Each structure stands twice: as structure tokens, then as C-alpha cells.
Image 1 (cartoon, rainbow, N blue to C red):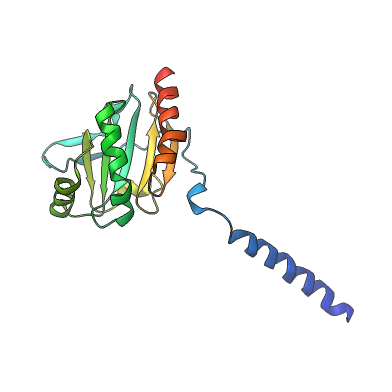
Image 2 (cartoon, one colour):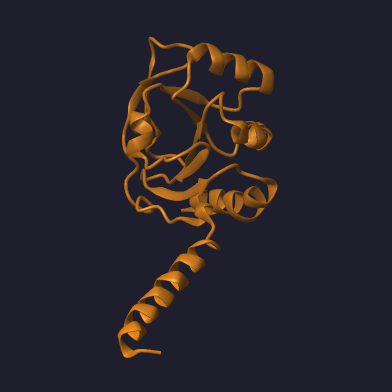
Amino acid sequence: MKPQFILPLIVFLGLSGFLARGLFLDPSKLPSPLIDKSAPQFQLPQLHTPDIQFNSADMIGQVWMLNVWASWCTACRVEHPYFNALSQSRLLPIVGLNYKDTSLEAKTWLNQLGNPYTFIATDSEGRVGIDWGVYGVPETFLIGRKGNIRYKHVGPVDQQAMDETILPLITALQAE
């Protein structure tokens, strides 16, 4: 092989290795830069009573969950039974952030599947979602008593995530 082709070949093989590795990464494991940082504050109208605002600052002092969902989201439908069950346990308040959705469709969806949420804020334009680093639905956050984001789950929550990560973390956060 001619010497002038060796360097381009090495560069090509190196880039190919990096790209091949990326094919096997799990996008739901992306770390959030907001973990252990103050949760972005927001004030939005509530879904069922739009004249009353939900203010996230009112949640300081308690452990709570924010679930970003939409009626058009198929994966949200998959995870919804887990939030219904968690809601029945009354371990913590679950705040729904209805993301880029219409009120009518969101209400219809909740009437069909049940409403596990203590509060539902409507983010029809998606601006609050951007502040929280949401790049798709569903996404779920656990927020500690001091208002810091302690955990982010990307994608639908399943029984394994609930049992192995979320429930133990809720217990730990409530003990802090």
C-alpha cells in the first residue's frame, strides 16, 4: 500500500469505529444536565380549570413527580397504567405536563384511561418542556424536597423501571 493512503485509512477506520459504537447506545440512557440542579420554575393553566394556574414553586418542600405526556403519544398510553397504580398508592403528588396537545383531546384521553395526576398543567406551545430539556414524550422527572431534579426517565415507564429505580428513589428522597 502506498504511504499517502495510510493516514486517510487510519482516520477512516477511527471514524467508522466511533460511528459503529453509536449504533449500540441506548438513547433513553442520555444523562440530563439538569440532574441535581434546580427544577425550572413554571406557572401554567390547569387542564380542567384553565382559570387556575399551577405554580411549580408551590411544590417546594415535597417530593413530587412530573410526567410529560400527550394524548397523541402512543408510548404515553403504554406507561399510563403504572402512573394510575402509583397514584393509588399516594406515595407522592404526580403532576402531569400535557405537552403540545389540545385540551379536548387530553380530557378525552384521561376520561378513557383514568387520571392519576394531582395537577395537570397545560404546555400547549411546549415552552416549559424546552426549559426542562424535553425532547420527546413521555419523559418523567422526580423532584426532591429542595426543588432539585433528582432523576429523569426518557421513554415509557415500565414495571422494571418502576420497581428497580423509581420506587426506591421515591423512598430515598422522602427519607432525606
